Amino acid sequence: MPVKGHPDIQAPSGRLCQRLAELDVTLVTVCADGGAGVQGRGRWEERLVVGSPVFASSLRSKWGELTQRSRQAVSLWPGLSLVPLYPGPGRSAGVHGCEAGEITAALLLGTELAESEQFHRVCDATETDRRAALSKMDVRALLSVEETQRLAQMIGWMARDTDDLGWRLNELHDLSWELAGSYEELSLLYKLSTSMVVDHPPQSFLEEACREMREVVGLRWLAIQLSPSEPGFADLSVPVCIESNSSYDKLVIRQMGPRLIEAIGGRTEPTIVDDVPGMGVPGLAQIAESLLVTPLHFDGKLLGLLYGADKIDSGLGLSTVDSKLCASLGSSLSIYLKNVLLYEDMQSMFLGTMHALSTTIDAKDSYTQGHSERVALMSRQLAEAAGLDDQAVQRVYLSGLVHDVGKIGVPEAVLTKPGKLTKEEYELVKMHPEIGARILEGIRQMDDLIPGVLHHHESWDGKGYPHGLAGHDIPLFGRIIGLADAYDAMSSDRTYRRAMPMAEVLDEVRRCSGKQFDPDLVEVFVGLDFGPYLEMISKHQNLKRSA
Image (cartoon, rainbow, N blue to C red; front, side, top):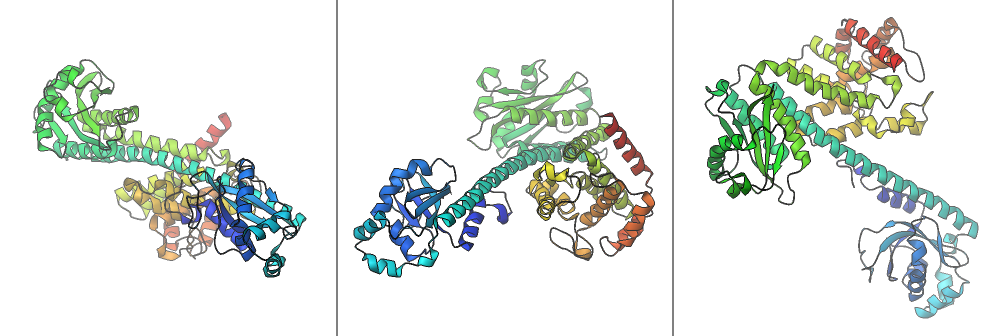
Protein backbone atom coordinates (compact mmCIF):
# COMPACT_ATOMS: atom_id res chain seq x y z
CA MET A 1 0.00 0.00 0.00
CA PRO A 2 1.70 3.25 -1.09
CA VAL A 3 2.43 6.16 1.21
CA LYS A 4 0.71 9.14 -0.33
CA GLY A 5 2.88 11.90 -1.66
CA HIS A 6 6.25 10.18 -1.32
CA PRO A 7 7.34 8.66 -4.66
CA ASP A 8 10.70 7.51 -3.30
CA ILE A 9 9.03 4.88 -1.14
CA GLN A 10 5.79 4.20 -3.02
CA ALA A 11 7.03 0.91 -4.50
CA PRO A 12 10.00 -0.75 -2.74
CA SER A 13 9.90 -3.49 -5.38
CA GLY A 14 10.45 -0.85 -8.05
CA ARG A 15 13.63 0.28 -6.35
CA LEU A 16 14.80 -3.34 -6.15
CA CYS A 17 14.26 -3.75 -9.90
CA GLN A 18 16.18 -0.56 -10.58
CA ARG A 19 19.12 -1.68 -8.46
CA LEU A 20 19.20 -5.11 -10.10
CA ALA A 21 19.18 -3.43 -13.51
CA GLU A 22 22.22 -1.40 -12.44
CA LEU A 23 23.90 -4.72 -11.56
CA ASP A 24 23.05 -5.95 -15.09
CA VAL A 25 20.71 -8.62 -13.70
CA THR A 26 17.80 -9.47 -16.01
CA LEU A 27 14.29 -9.91 -14.58
CA VAL A 28 11.66 -12.25 -16.00
CA THR A 29 7.93 -12.57 -15.43
CA VAL A 30 6.94 -16.22 -15.02
CA CYS A 31 3.58 -17.93 -14.61
CA ALA A 32 2.46 -21.19 -13.06
CA ASP A 33 1.36 -22.56 -16.43
CA GLY A 34 4.79 -21.99 -17.98
CA GLY A 35 4.17 -18.61 -19.58
CA ALA A 36 7.22 -16.35 -19.30
CA GLY A 37 8.73 -13.16 -20.67
CA VAL A 38 11.91 -11.11 -20.26
CA GLN A 39 11.38 -7.67 -18.71
CA GLY A 40 13.15 -5.04 -20.78
CA ARG A 41 15.32 -5.93 -23.75
CA GLY A 42 17.46 -8.66 -22.19
CA ARG A 43 20.35 -10.40 -23.92
CA TRP A 44 19.86 -12.59 -26.98
CA GLU A 45 20.56 -15.86 -25.21
CA GLU A 46 18.19 -14.90 -22.36
CA ARG A 47 15.31 -14.28 -24.76
CA LEU A 48 16.13 -17.53 -26.58
CA VAL A 49 16.04 -19.61 -23.40
CA VAL A 50 13.02 -17.95 -21.74
CA GLY A 51 10.93 -18.12 -24.90
CA SER A 52 11.51 -21.85 -25.41
CA PRO A 53 9.09 -24.69 -24.60
CA VAL A 54 11.93 -26.36 -22.68
CA PHE A 55 11.98 -23.41 -20.27
CA ALA A 56 8.17 -23.54 -19.93
CA SER A 57 8.25 -27.25 -19.12
CA SER A 58 11.00 -26.81 -16.51
CA LEU A 59 9.18 -23.85 -15.03
CA ARG A 60 6.00 -25.84 -14.51
CA SER A 61 7.88 -28.63 -12.77
CA LYS A 62 9.73 -26.19 -10.47
CA TRP A 63 6.78 -23.87 -9.73
CA GLY A 64 6.25 -25.25 -6.24
CA GLU A 65 9.82 -24.37 -5.24
CA LEU A 66 9.55 -20.89 -6.79
CA THR A 67 6.39 -20.02 -4.84
CA GLN A 68 7.68 -20.97 -1.41
CA ARG A 69 8.75 -17.31 -1.03
CA SER A 70 12.07 -18.44 0.38
CA ARG A 71 13.87 -15.91 -1.84
CA GLN A 72 16.44 -18.61 -2.59
CA ALA A 73 17.74 -19.55 -6.04
CA VAL A 74 15.93 -22.37 -7.83
CA SER A 75 17.94 -24.23 -10.50
CA LEU A 76 15.86 -25.13 -13.55
CA TRP A 77 18.80 -26.89 -15.15
CA PRO A 78 22.62 -26.64 -15.09
CA GLY A 79 23.62 -23.04 -15.77
CA LEU A 80 20.08 -21.62 -15.40
CA SER A 81 18.69 -20.37 -12.08
CA LEU A 82 15.77 -18.17 -10.99
CA VAL A 83 15.61 -16.13 -7.78
CA PRO A 84 11.93 -15.38 -6.95
CA LEU A 85 11.39 -11.77 -5.89
CA TYR A 86 7.71 -10.88 -5.53
CA PRO A 87 4.28 -11.40 -7.21
CA GLY A 88 4.09 -9.69 -10.59
CA PRO A 89 1.97 -6.55 -11.12
CA GLY A 90 -0.38 -8.38 -13.53
CA ARG A 91 -0.16 -9.71 -17.06
CA SER A 92 2.88 -8.33 -18.82
CA ALA A 93 2.94 -7.35 -22.48
CA GLY A 94 3.99 -10.29 -24.64
CA VAL A 95 3.48 -12.90 -21.87
CA HIS A 96 0.76 -15.42 -22.68
CA GLY A 97 -1.16 -17.85 -20.54
CA CYS A 98 -0.80 -16.00 -17.21
CA GLU A 99 -4.27 -16.64 -15.82
CA ALA A 100 -2.60 -18.57 -12.97
CA GLY A 101 -0.15 -17.17 -10.45
CA GLU A 102 2.55 -14.81 -11.67
CA ILE A 103 5.84 -13.76 -10.08
CA THR A 104 8.89 -11.73 -10.99
CA ALA A 105 12.27 -13.46 -10.73
CA ALA A 106 15.94 -12.67 -11.35
CA LEU A 107 17.41 -14.73 -14.21
CA LEU A 108 20.96 -16.00 -13.69
CA LEU A 109 22.82 -17.75 -16.55
CA GLY A 110 25.98 -19.69 -15.73
CA THR A 111 28.92 -21.12 -17.64
CA GLU A 112 27.37 -24.61 -17.49
CA LEU A 113 24.48 -23.49 -19.70
CA ALA A 114 26.18 -24.00 -23.08
CA GLU A 115 27.07 -27.64 -22.38
CA SER A 116 23.80 -28.61 -20.75
CA GLU A 117 21.45 -31.10 -22.37
CA GLN A 118 18.59 -28.65 -21.93
CA PHE A 119 20.36 -25.98 -24.00
CA HIS A 120 20.75 -28.52 -26.82
CA ARG A 121 16.99 -29.11 -26.58
CA VAL A 122 16.32 -25.36 -26.58
CA CYS A 123 18.24 -25.00 -29.84
CA ASP A 124 16.43 -27.98 -31.37
CA ALA A 125 13.00 -26.77 -30.23
CA THR A 126 13.60 -23.26 -31.59
CA GLU A 127 15.32 -24.50 -34.76
CA THR A 128 18.47 -22.59 -33.83
CA ASP A 129 21.91 -23.76 -34.95
CA ARG A 130 23.77 -24.57 -31.73
CA ARG A 131 27.17 -23.44 -33.00
CA ALA A 132 25.70 -20.19 -34.26
CA ALA A 133 23.96 -19.76 -30.92
CA LEU A 134 27.22 -20.28 -29.01
CA SER A 135 29.06 -17.79 -31.21
CA LYS A 136 26.31 -15.22 -30.68
CA MET A 137 26.16 -15.78 -26.94
CA ASP A 138 27.80 -13.19 -24.64
CA VAL A 139 30.01 -15.59 -22.70
CA ARG A 140 31.39 -12.74 -20.59
CA ALA A 141 27.97 -12.36 -19.00
CA LEU A 142 27.84 -16.00 -17.91
CA LEU A 143 28.51 -16.63 -14.22
CA SER A 144 30.65 -19.27 -12.61
CA VAL A 145 29.02 -21.59 -10.10
CA GLU A 146 30.53 -19.62 -7.22
CA GLU A 147 29.46 -16.29 -8.72
CA THR A 148 25.95 -17.58 -9.25
CA GLN A 149 25.70 -18.67 -5.61
CA ARG A 150 27.00 -15.36 -4.28
CA LEU A 151 24.79 -13.24 -6.55
CA ALA A 152 21.72 -15.34 -5.78
CA GLN A 153 22.34 -14.96 -2.05
CA MET A 154 22.75 -11.19 -2.40
CA ILE A 155 19.55 -10.87 -4.46
CA GLY A 156 17.71 -12.97 -1.87
CA TRP A 157 18.87 -10.64 0.88
CA MET A 158 17.76 -7.60 -1.13
CA ALA A 159 14.36 -9.19 -1.80
CA ARG A 160 13.81 -10.02 1.86
CA ASP A 161 14.79 -6.45 2.82
CA THR A 162 12.29 -5.20 0.24
CA ASP A 163 9.59 -7.40 1.78
CA ASP A 164 10.36 -5.98 5.20
CA LEU A 165 10.34 -2.40 3.93
CA GLY A 166 7.01 -2.96 2.19
CA TRP A 167 5.53 -4.37 5.39
CA ARG A 168 6.78 -1.44 7.41
CA LEU A 169 5.44 1.05 4.87
CA ASN A 170 2.05 -0.64 5.01
CA GLU A 171 2.14 -0.43 8.79
CA LEU A 172 3.09 3.25 8.63
CA HIS A 173 0.33 3.91 6.10
CA ASP A 174 -2.26 2.23 8.32
CA LEU A 175 -1.05 4.18 11.32
CA SER A 176 -1.18 7.40 9.31
CA TRP A 177 -4.80 6.77 8.41
CA GLU A 178 -5.67 5.96 12.01
CA LEU A 179 -4.01 9.15 13.16
CA ALA A 180 -5.71 11.04 10.34
CA GLY A 181 -9.08 9.85 11.60
CA SER A 182 -8.17 10.87 15.14
CA TYR A 183 -6.94 14.25 13.95
CA GLU A 184 -10.19 14.82 12.03
CA GLU A 185 -12.09 14.31 15.25
CA LEU A 186 -9.66 16.36 17.33
CA SER A 187 -9.64 19.12 14.77
CA LEU A 188 -13.42 19.27 14.69
CA LEU A 189 -13.56 19.28 18.49
CA TYR A 190 -11.06 22.12 18.50
CA LYS A 191 -12.93 24.06 15.83
CA LEU A 192 -16.18 23.73 17.73
CA SER A 193 -14.51 24.75 20.96
CA THR A 194 -12.99 27.89 19.45
CA SER A 195 -16.44 28.91 18.17
CA MET A 196 -17.94 28.71 21.65
CA VAL A 197 -17.75 32.42 22.38
CA VAL A 198 -20.35 34.62 24.01
CA ASP A 199 -20.69 37.14 21.17
CA HIS A 200 -21.55 34.46 18.56
CA PRO A 201 -25.28 33.72 18.12
CA PRO A 202 -26.10 30.13 19.17
CA GLN A 203 -27.94 29.63 15.87
CA SER A 204 -24.76 30.36 13.86
CA PHE A 205 -22.71 28.05 16.02
CA LEU A 206 -25.23 25.18 15.78
CA GLU A 207 -25.53 25.52 11.98
CA GLU A 208 -21.76 25.43 11.57
CA ALA A 209 -21.48 22.53 14.03
CA CYS A 210 -24.13 20.57 12.15
CA ARG A 211 -22.40 21.13 8.82
CA GLU A 212 -18.96 20.11 10.11
CA MET A 213 -20.18 17.05 12.02
CA ARG A 214 -22.16 15.75 9.04
CA GLU A 215 -19.03 16.06 6.88
CA VAL A 216 -16.73 14.30 9.34
CA VAL A 217 -19.14 11.47 10.25
CA GLY A 218 -20.23 11.11 6.61
CA LEU A 219 -24.03 11.05 7.10
CA ARG A 220 -26.77 11.79 4.56
CA TRP A 221 -28.36 14.23 7.00
CA LEU A 222 -27.77 15.38 10.56
CA ALA A 223 -29.76 17.46 13.02
CA ILE A 224 -29.53 18.95 16.49
CA GLN A 225 -32.85 19.12 18.35
CA LEU A 226 -32.95 21.19 21.54
CA SER A 227 -35.14 20.02 24.39
CA PRO A 228 -38.51 21.86 24.39
CA SER A 229 -38.73 21.36 28.16
CA GLU A 230 -35.56 23.35 28.83
CA PRO A 231 -36.55 26.98 29.66
CA GLY A 232 -33.10 28.25 28.74
CA PHE A 233 -33.73 27.43 25.06
CA ALA A 234 -37.05 29.25 24.83
CA ASP A 235 -35.53 32.42 23.40
CA LEU A 236 -33.59 30.67 20.63
CA SER A 237 -35.00 31.46 17.18
CA VAL A 238 -34.43 27.92 15.90
CA PRO A 239 -34.96 24.99 18.32
CA VAL A 240 -33.74 22.53 15.67
CA CYS A 241 -30.75 22.84 13.35
CA ILE A 242 -30.64 20.65 10.24
CA GLU A 243 -27.96 19.88 7.66
CA SER A 244 -29.44 18.14 4.61
CA ASN A 245 -29.63 18.64 0.86
CA SER A 246 -33.35 17.80 0.66
CA SER A 247 -36.05 20.33 1.56
CA TYR A 248 -38.51 17.45 2.15
CA ASP A 249 -36.07 15.81 4.59
CA LYS A 250 -35.75 19.08 6.49
CA LEU A 251 -39.52 19.39 6.93
CA VAL A 252 -39.87 15.84 8.25
CA ILE A 253 -36.78 16.14 10.45
CA ARG A 254 -38.11 19.34 11.99
CA GLN A 255 -41.38 17.64 12.89
CA MET A 256 -39.80 14.46 14.27
CA GLY A 257 -37.32 16.08 16.67
CA PRO A 258 -39.61 16.45 19.70
CA ARG A 259 -41.05 12.96 19.06
CA LEU A 260 -37.57 11.46 19.09
CA ILE A 261 -36.83 13.11 22.44
CA GLU A 262 -39.90 11.36 23.85
CA ALA A 263 -39.00 8.06 22.17
CA ILE A 264 -35.48 7.75 23.60
CA GLY A 265 -36.77 7.96 27.18
CA GLY A 266 -33.96 7.96 29.73
CA ARG A 267 -31.18 6.75 27.43
CA THR A 268 -27.87 8.45 27.97
CA GLU A 269 -25.63 6.64 25.48
CA PRO A 270 -25.57 6.88 21.67
CA THR A 271 -27.88 4.38 19.99
CA ILE A 272 -27.89 2.95 16.46
CA VAL A 273 -31.49 2.17 15.46
CA ASP A 274 -31.88 -0.36 12.62
CA ASP A 275 -35.62 -0.87 13.14
CA VAL A 276 -36.61 2.67 12.17
CA PRO A 277 -40.33 1.93 11.57
CA GLY A 278 -40.52 0.36 15.03
CA MET A 279 -39.80 3.74 16.64
CA GLY A 280 -43.27 4.90 15.62
CA VAL A 281 -42.12 8.37 14.51
CA PRO A 282 -44.22 9.52 11.51
CA GLY A 283 -42.26 10.02 8.29
CA LEU A 284 -38.97 8.77 9.72
CA ALA A 285 -38.91 5.51 7.75
CA GLN A 286 -39.18 7.48 4.48
CA ILE A 287 -35.93 9.39 5.08
CA ALA A 288 -33.80 6.95 7.07
CA GLU A 289 -32.85 3.27 6.79
CA SER A 290 -30.82 3.42 10.03
CA LEU A 291 -30.60 6.15 12.60
CA LEU A 292 -27.87 7.28 15.00
CA VAL A 293 -29.25 9.06 18.05
CA THR A 294 -26.95 10.73 20.59
CA PRO A 295 -28.57 12.28 23.70
CA LEU A 296 -27.03 15.57 24.80
CA HIS A 297 -26.75 15.41 28.59
CA PHE A 298 -25.12 17.68 31.10
CA ASP A 299 -25.26 17.13 34.88
CA GLY A 300 -27.94 14.47 34.41
CA LYS A 301 -30.23 16.74 32.36
CA LEU A 302 -31.26 16.06 28.77
CA LEU A 303 -30.52 19.20 26.78
CA GLY A 304 -31.31 17.84 23.33
CA LEU A 305 -30.49 15.28 20.67
CA LEU A 306 -27.88 14.89 18.00
CA TYR A 307 -29.35 12.55 15.39
CA GLY A 308 -28.53 11.59 11.82
CA ALA A 309 -29.17 8.90 9.25
CA ASP A 310 -27.39 6.70 6.71
CA LYS A 311 -23.78 6.93 5.57
CA ILE A 312 -23.20 8.87 2.35
CA ASP A 313 -21.17 5.90 1.13
CA SER A 314 -23.95 3.43 0.44
CA GLY A 315 -21.56 0.52 0.92
CA LEU A 316 -21.09 1.34 4.59
CA GLY A 317 -23.50 1.10 7.49
CA LEU A 318 -23.53 2.99 10.76
CA SER A 319 -20.98 1.50 13.15
CA THR A 320 -19.69 1.76 16.69
CA VAL A 321 -16.94 4.04 15.33
CA ASP A 322 -19.62 6.53 14.23
CA SER A 323 -21.35 6.08 17.57
CA LYS A 324 -18.17 6.84 19.52
CA LEU A 325 -17.41 9.84 17.33
CA CYS A 326 -20.91 11.26 17.79
CA ALA A 327 -20.62 10.62 21.53
CA SER A 328 -17.52 12.81 21.59
CA LEU A 329 -19.19 15.48 19.50
CA GLY A 330 -22.37 15.25 21.56
CA SER A 331 -20.38 15.79 24.71
CA SER A 332 -18.92 18.98 23.24
CA LEU A 333 -22.35 20.23 22.20
CA SER A 334 -23.75 19.48 25.64
CA ILE A 335 -21.07 21.62 27.23
CA TYR A 336 -21.79 24.48 24.81
CA LEU A 337 -25.54 24.26 25.26
CA LYS A 338 -25.23 24.34 29.02
CA ASN A 339 -22.84 27.26 29.32
CA VAL A 340 -20.57 29.00 26.80
CA LEU A 341 -18.30 29.97 29.68
CA LEU A 342 -17.14 26.33 29.76
CA TYR A 343 -15.22 27.03 26.54
CA GLU A 344 -11.95 26.94 28.40
CA ASP A 345 -12.73 23.46 29.70
CA MET A 346 -13.42 22.31 26.18
CA GLN A 347 -10.13 23.67 24.92
CA SER A 348 -8.34 22.04 27.82
CA MET A 349 -9.80 18.68 26.80
CA PHE A 350 -8.51 19.12 23.26
CA LEU A 351 -5.07 20.22 24.38
CA GLY A 352 -4.96 17.36 26.84
CA THR A 353 -5.47 14.94 23.97
CA MET A 354 -2.71 16.63 22.01
CA HIS A 355 -0.44 16.40 25.07
CA ALA A 356 -1.27 12.71 25.36
CA LEU A 357 -0.23 12.23 21.73
CA SER A 358 3.04 14.12 22.25
CA THR A 359 3.72 12.10 25.40
CA THR A 360 3.18 8.90 23.43
CA ILE A 361 5.72 10.09 20.87
CA ASP A 362 8.28 11.07 23.52
CA ALA A 363 7.78 7.73 25.27
CA LYS A 364 9.78 6.05 22.49
CA ASP A 365 12.84 7.55 24.16
CA SER A 366 12.82 7.89 27.94
CA TYR A 367 15.67 10.40 27.74
CA THR A 368 13.47 12.88 25.87
CA GLN A 369 10.44 12.57 28.17
CA GLY A 370 8.43 15.81 27.99
CA HIS A 371 10.48 17.10 25.04
CA SER A 372 7.48 17.88 22.82
CA GLU A 373 5.65 19.65 25.63
CA ARG A 374 8.69 21.80 26.42
CA VAL A 375 9.28 22.64 22.76
CA ALA A 376 5.61 23.64 22.45
CA LEU A 377 5.92 25.87 25.54
CA MET A 378 9.06 27.66 24.32
CA SER A 379 7.61 27.97 20.79
CA ARG A 380 4.50 29.64 22.20
CA GLN A 381 6.55 32.03 24.31
CA LEU A 382 8.75 32.93 21.35
CA ALA A 383 5.74 33.40 19.04
CA GLU A 384 4.08 35.71 21.58
CA ALA A 385 7.24 37.75 22.08
CA ALA A 386 7.74 37.98 18.30
CA GLY A 387 4.35 39.67 17.96
CA LEU A 388 2.21 36.92 16.40
CA ASP A 389 -1.56 37.15 16.92
CA ASP A 390 -3.34 34.91 19.41
CA GLN A 391 -4.55 32.46 16.77
CA ALA A 392 -1.07 32.04 15.27
CA VAL A 393 0.47 31.63 18.73
CA GLN A 394 -1.94 28.80 19.49
CA ARG A 395 -1.21 27.07 16.17
CA VAL A 396 2.55 27.35 16.78
CA TYR A 397 1.98 25.71 20.16
CA LEU A 398 0.04 22.82 18.62
CA SER A 399 2.63 22.41 15.88
CA GLY A 400 5.29 22.24 18.59
CA LEU A 401 3.38 19.49 20.38
CA VAL A 402 3.35 17.25 17.30
CA HIS A 403 6.63 18.37 15.69
CA ASP A 404 8.23 14.96 16.34
CA VAL A 405 5.20 12.81 15.40
CA GLY A 406 7.29 11.41 12.53
CA LYS A 407 9.55 9.61 15.02
CA ILE A 408 6.82 6.97 15.07
CA GLY A 409 8.44 5.78 11.86
CA VAL A 410 12.03 5.73 13.21
CA PRO A 411 13.27 2.50 14.86
CA GLU A 412 13.38 2.80 18.63
CA ALA A 413 16.84 1.24 18.69
CA VAL A 414 18.13 4.21 16.71
CA LEU A 415 16.36 6.82 18.86
CA THR A 416 17.72 5.35 22.09
CA LYS A 417 21.20 4.41 20.88
CA PRO A 418 23.92 5.64 23.22
CA GLY A 419 26.81 7.34 21.50
CA LYS A 420 27.23 8.58 17.96
CA LEU A 421 24.89 7.36 15.22
CA THR A 422 26.19 5.80 12.06
CA LYS A 423 25.59 7.59 8.76
CA GLU A 424 22.77 5.15 7.94
CA GLU A 425 21.17 5.60 11.36
CA TYR A 426 21.37 9.37 11.06
CA GLU A 427 19.66 9.18 7.67
CA LEU A 428 16.81 7.27 9.33
CA VAL A 429 16.46 9.99 11.97
CA LYS A 430 16.47 12.67 9.27
CA MET A 431 13.36 11.10 7.76
CA HIS A 432 11.13 12.01 10.71
CA PRO A 433 10.08 15.53 9.55
CA GLU A 434 8.81 14.15 6.23
CA ILE A 435 7.14 11.17 7.90
CA GLY A 436 5.41 13.57 10.30
CA ALA A 437 4.25 15.79 7.44
CA ARG A 438 2.82 12.75 5.61
CA ILE A 439 0.93 11.70 8.73
CA LEU A 440 -0.73 15.13 8.95
CA GLU A 441 -1.24 15.80 5.23
CA GLY A 442 -4.77 15.62 3.88
CA ILE A 443 -6.25 16.84 7.18
CA ARG A 444 -7.29 20.31 6.12
CA GLN A 445 -7.78 21.47 9.70
CA MET A 446 -4.12 20.63 10.39
CA ASP A 447 -2.62 22.06 7.19
CA ASP A 448 -1.10 25.07 8.94
CA LEU A 449 0.76 22.82 11.44
CA ILE A 450 2.66 20.94 8.73
CA PRO A 451 5.30 23.65 7.99
CA GLY A 452 6.46 23.52 11.60
CA VAL A 453 6.61 19.72 11.54
CA LEU A 454 8.31 19.49 8.14
CA HIS A 455 10.85 22.33 8.46
CA HIS A 456 11.90 22.48 12.13
CA HIS A 457 15.33 21.06 11.19
CA GLU A 458 16.05 23.54 8.40
CA SER A 459 18.96 25.92 9.01
CA TRP A 460 19.13 29.67 8.35
CA ASP A 461 22.28 29.13 6.27
CA GLY A 462 20.64 26.42 4.15
CA LYS A 463 22.57 23.48 5.63
CA GLY A 464 19.60 21.84 7.35
CA TYR A 465 17.15 19.16 6.24
CA PRO A 466 14.96 17.86 4.68
CA HIS A 467 14.91 20.46 1.88
CA GLY A 468 17.94 22.66 2.57
CA LEU A 469 15.86 25.85 2.74
CA ALA A 470 17.60 29.04 3.82
CA GLY A 471 16.66 32.38 5.38
CA HIS A 472 13.08 33.52 5.07
CA ASP A 473 12.35 30.66 2.67
CA ILE A 474 12.01 28.57 5.83
CA PRO A 475 8.38 28.90 7.06
CA LEU A 476 8.06 30.96 10.23
CA PHE A 477 6.62 28.04 12.21
CA GLY A 478 9.67 25.97 11.25
CA ARG A 479 12.10 28.71 12.33
CA ILE A 480 10.34 29.17 15.68
CA ILE A 481 10.01 25.48 16.52
CA GLY A 482 13.53 24.75 15.26
CA LEU A 483 15.01 27.27 17.70
CA ALA A 484 12.91 25.96 20.60
CA ASP A 485 13.76 22.36 19.67
CA ALA A 486 17.51 23.03 19.60
CA TYR A 487 17.33 24.91 22.91
CA ASP A 488 15.58 22.00 24.64
CA ALA A 489 17.96 19.46 23.07
CA MET A 490 20.95 21.30 24.53
CA SER A 491 19.21 21.86 27.89
CA SER A 492 18.17 18.22 28.40
CA ASP A 493 20.02 15.02 29.26
CA ARG A 494 20.47 12.72 26.25
CA THR A 495 21.79 9.19 25.89
CA TYR A 496 25.10 10.52 24.60
CA ARG A 497 25.70 13.55 26.88
CA ARG A 498 24.55 15.53 29.93
CA ALA A 499 22.51 18.71 29.70
CA MET A 500 24.45 21.96 29.16
CA PRO A 501 24.12 24.82 31.68
CA MET A 502 21.64 27.51 30.60
CA ALA A 503 24.32 30.18 30.19
CA GLU A 504 26.24 27.94 27.78
CA VAL A 505 23.06 27.10 25.90
CA LEU A 506 22.21 30.76 25.39
CA ASP A 507 25.80 31.49 24.32
CA GLU A 508 25.50 28.72 21.76
CA VAL A 509 22.18 30.12 20.52
CA ARG A 510 23.81 33.55 20.08
CA ARG A 511 26.80 31.99 18.33
CA CYS A 512 24.51 30.24 15.84
CA SER A 513 22.50 33.38 15.11
CA GLY A 514 22.50 33.93 11.36
CA LYS A 515 23.91 30.42 10.83
CA GLN A 516 21.48 27.89 12.21
CA PHE A 517 18.86 30.29 13.59
CA ASP A 518 16.91 33.33 12.38
CA PRO A 519 18.85 36.27 13.88
CA ASP A 520 15.66 38.27 14.53
CA LEU A 521 14.16 35.38 16.48
CA VAL A 522 17.40 34.85 18.41
CA GLU A 523 17.32 38.47 19.58
CA VAL A 524 13.80 37.92 20.95
CA PHE A 525 14.52 34.43 22.30
CA VAL A 526 17.44 35.33 24.56
CA GLY A 527 15.21 37.88 26.30
CA LEU A 528 12.46 35.41 27.19
CA ASP A 529 11.49 34.45 30.74
CA PHE A 530 12.86 30.91 31.10
CA GLY A 531 11.23 30.38 34.51
CA PRO A 532 8.23 28.40 33.15
CA TYR A 533 10.57 26.23 31.09
CA LEU A 534 12.76 25.44 34.10
CA GLU A 535 9.68 24.55 36.15
CA MET A 536 8.50 22.21 33.42
CA ILE A 537 11.85 20.48 33.02
CA SER A 538 12.01 20.01 36.79
CA LYS A 539 8.53 18.45 36.70
CA HIS A 540 9.56 16.07 33.93
CA GLN A 541 12.73 15.08 35.80
CA ASN A 542 10.68 14.29 38.92
CA LEU A 543 8.28 12.18 36.85
CA LYS A 544 11.21 10.29 35.36
CA ARG A 545 12.72 9.62 38.78
CA SER A 546 9.39 8.43 40.21
CA ALA A 547 8.67 6.17 37.21
